Image (cartoon, rainbow, N blue to C red; front, side):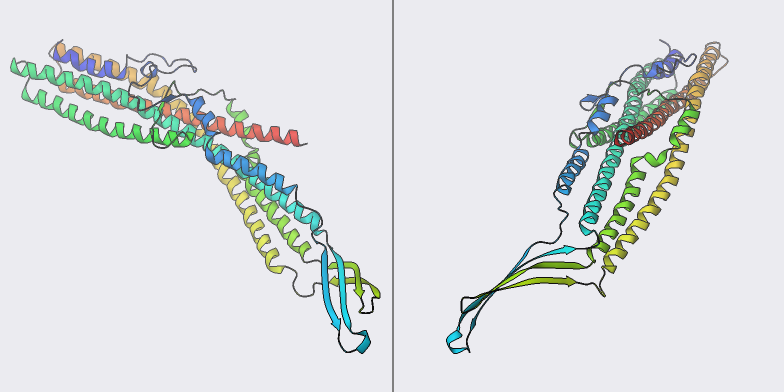
Length: 437
């Protein structure tokens, strides 16, 4: 192999064969068909990472908390007042012959007016509904974390694979130029340029290995499989089935069904229920009962007991005000979050279209043009009309574009997955509403 031919090999073998027309939607480019060779741990597919996120401690813990809270809510009695028993032992000491032991016993029951028992059960249920919404929001967030971690790691692994192949060919190029220098075919400048390229690739490789290790740990954390052992990816980018953009916009319009928005709305509802509970707690309390008095003479005296606790000044104004403030804050947060999510969903739709167009441009036009440029400059070099520097420049330019394509494909995969996860969350919320009716 002559030096100029190896330059072409360095560009073409490293980055894959010349790209033709864009492959069908269900496939990926040829330079990403094979799984990355540099793995740092157990390989997991995208579906496995999403599924494992549901078993992470934070998700299972929230689910257990909801079940426990609902069970305890059912134990709350409607009657808030307990029986009261009062014993008053004493003695008659100044009645001469009537002196002796006496005892008064009173048993009474109170009833709080204002529907307090019903109000506190309603407040507890509203609080539990908010906790359940928080559990759903946390589970969705965990799915997003796992999906993002998997895609970022897969992209880094692909770039690492490309760089490892790049380094192997760069070292071969250095060795060939060293032999050519000894034989007088190449110059010291040729060798220095090849050595500089090798060192640059080595530096990039070291950085990528560190990035892959860190992202592997991140994926392990997102899957709840232990933060000390990095994972690797298995398989290709996911390709979820998505409806047309117009249908996506229609479904995304129901963003108030997303768990994060529902959480704020239910928190506001729970705070209002707590305010009603505080108001009912300050209502009047009536008491009724009976009292028995044992005289020193042995006679019994019976009394009826009737009493009331009437709120005059303190009506739980402090607690009611705090609950009302929390309700207003939660309502404002729900409105603000709805605006932010509307912008997020609009951005996701734009990213879907933008990243797809960029992938098609890089894969279908940019790389083929650069492949033809490399071939043309190689032909010019063979005919004595070009320079090796021009061939290297074209090869370097193709390398940059190939990496841009890898990044664009990762961005497009994330845009698709992001839209899919939002659609799944909206569908689950709609199904839950239908079930509850």
